Every structure is written in C-alpha cells, then in structure tokens.
Image (cartoon, rainbow, N blue to C red):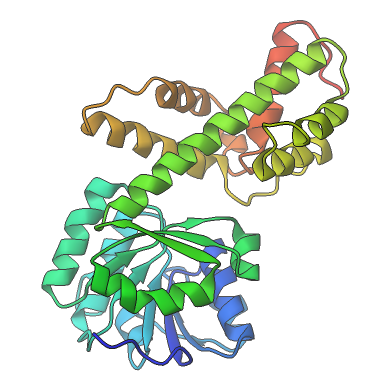
Amino acid sequence: MSTPALRGTVALIGCGAMGAALGQRLLARGWRLRVYNRSVGKTQPLSAAGASVHDSPRSAIDGAHWVLSVLTDSAALRAVLMGPEGVLAAPARGRCLIDLGTHFPAELVPLAAEAASRGWPLVEAPVTGSVHDASHGTLNFLVGGAAADVAWARPMLEALGRALFHLGPVGAGNTAKLALNLLVGLMAGGLGEAIALLRAHGLDVARFLVALDGSGLASPLYRRLGQRYLDGDHAPRFSLANLEKDLGWARRHAEASGLAPRLAPVLCDLLAQLPAEAKPLDYSALIRHLAARASVMAGVGSGE
C-alpha cells in the first residue's frame, strides 16, 4: 500500500471540539479540507475557515487522499460507515480510515473487521491530549492496527501530533486509552480529596500545589488541574460526562478480560452521583466537588 503525498486533501468526519481543532490546524497549514458532521451547525467554523461542507460521508471522502473520523463512540462510527451514503459505499482505492475517537474495544474490533472486509482497513489512533494540544500539534496517539496500515497512516498522524505509539492490532489503542483515562480519573479524584484535607486544616492550597510541583509526584496534569481549581475554571476541555463514559468502559473491559477491578467501580459510582448540571463541566470540577463535599460533611466552610 503506497502512502499518498503528505500535502493534499483530507476528509474529516466529525466536527466536535477535537475534530474542529484538528480541522483548523490542517487548514492553517495549507491542507484542503472536506468535512461532514451529522449536526451541520458544527461545521460552520471550519466552513468559514475554508473547508467545504458535504451532506454525506461518501460525498466528503470523494477525492480525499486521507480520511479521518473523530466521533463519540462506535455507534456513531457505524452510522457514518454504513448505508448507501456511508464511507464504505465508496471504493477505498488504497486508503485507510484513520479513527481518532475513543471507543469500547469490544465494539470497535468487529466494526473494524467489517470495514476491512469491504476494503477499508481501519487504524485506531485515540489521542492523549486536549483541544489545546490538537491546535498546537502536541497530541500523542495510541495506535492499533495492522503494521502495513499503521505505516500508511503514520505520515498523517505525525503531521497532526507529536508522537504515535503502535501498541498492537485494532483494540490495543483503545484499551490503552481507557487505561490512561482510568489514571486521569484517579489523579483528579485523589487531588480533590487531598485538597479537602488541606482545607479542613486551613492550609494554603496554592502553596501546597507549588510544593507538589517540586516533589517526586510532580506532574503536568496535577499542575493544570490544580490551577483550574484555584481559578474556578471548569470550562470543558474533557467533560465529566466523557470521563464517566470512559471509566464505565474501562470497568466493563476489565471485567470482560477476567479481572476484578476495584478502583474503577468506585470512580464510576462517584461520577454517577454528580448532579446533571455538573456533567458538561471539565473533569477538573471533580476536584471542586470532592473538596466542597468533604468540607461540608466535616463542617468546614466551603470558601477558599
């Protein structure tokens, strides 16, 4: 399978926050972009920046050298692949589908096999990083797929981000992504309870965070989450709803693998108890929730 010229036309299927950020980066760097999204309104910023908007996945990929999908789950991916106007209705002509979404592996693997049987190999490349990273080319990709297909997709992934890690066949990338997001949930939850303990004793949270950053536990994630907590900035980068979804998948995937997870169920139960209005917030809001809840239960004032 030959790799197309790195400059050319990209079809982008899915124009949510991550897809839109990747699309804007491609346009800014001189790529031609053809886009499709089920909700047409989400394509408007890309259209204003020069992308052409299409009314079906099949139309969007017509003439594109590369095909990227950034969708919420495997049900959404199946919807854009199947049917007379889906991706699979068009000839692959040596192309692969590069999927950047997060999926439940047990749903993605058979879908990828079905796509491959119809001539469209799928390379999964869920991202590690935020919308900011997508805009600045600093994403990493956790990749699953056949070696030849990953080699084909590599130039595009390297153009979009900083590094890729080929971990095995389809399913491996999303298994790693769920493992990573389990750690994200544990770190956010742990920081929330740590801050609650500090506040219960009247300690300076900002000063503690500086000490944490200079310790053996220093982490860019703790730094970002701690600053968002101090600033009260919980505008969504990665929402609590998405964290809850991914942790539920991580729990199911572990159980289906013969494991008996202990921490994932606790986090799932905790997230399920959050009020509905909190779910669209950034997952850093989990720190605020845990700190406030612990303080109230202990009779400590909730003010900082």
